[in-house]
Image 1 (cartoon, each protein chain N blue to C red):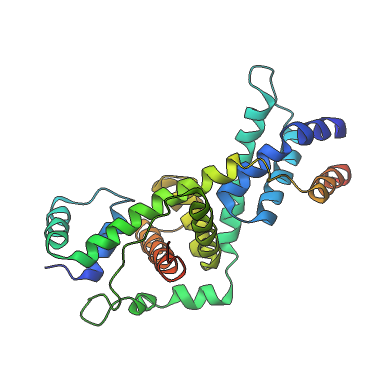
Image 2: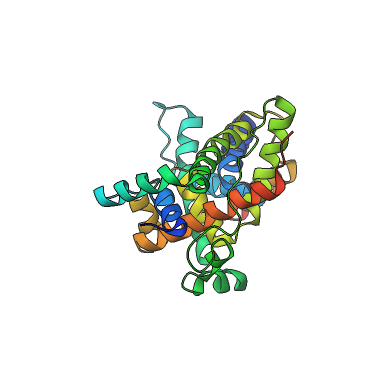
Length: 81
Length: 185
């Protein structure tokens, strides 16, 4: 029987590697009976979605511009390089 | 040469900066990334008319951003050392000795309008920047750049297990930070 700590580790790792058959079975069983770990799984999904939104928001935000002083600095760096 | 760079900066500077900022979440690092891109572009001089200058520059930028994340990862602060040195103790803040949650995760009230969405994303941005540097850089590489695990281990010179542990800590910290700082509507 997995503890919540172990279950949460597997939930996170499932985003990074394929879980083994036995890990999947144990995790599914734990999630079936544990509301808290289900919420954790949901939080990680929401985090993933939010990260994508944050990325898109920045990419498409036309008010964000390369600061003028940075531009000057870059040109200067190239001159002396 | 300089006039090339001047044109590139005028035509694509803002785009490249936004592209970098979106993935690095740090204005200074994003500026550095653009600068490194320009230096490298001028040196390599490998631009061929087949692709647009923007595509070419973005390709260079992607590599430069990974270089910067790697540098960030290696440049460890004292607090990072304490954080990561102990075997697994930082997770004791989240679980009791028998592995039960100390504070059960709560449901986030996800934003449902544009204003709230903006506030939510700004909270998230702050939370990302509060992560220890090492955790931030590995998290950015994995969940923002979407680099695969094998490459992360290669780039950062760490084991797969090490990467999973750090990603777990980063995600754990971020969702807790959101819980504490985002109360929703």
